Image 1 (cartoon, rainbow, N blue to C red):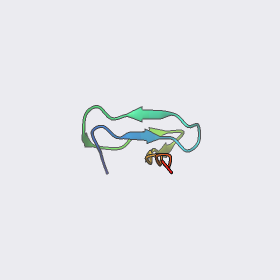
Image 2: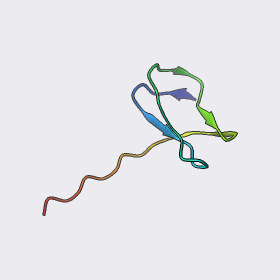
Image 3: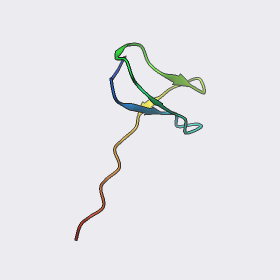
Length: 47
């Protein structure tokens, strides 16, 4: 797996976050598990 420049990765165990500043091969690991890309939060409605 490759990491993506500018994406945030989050650990689902301890909620630690990492910001990728250099793209390349490999993956981020925390708590012996691979970190997942953090999903964007929805913007509030302007209704």
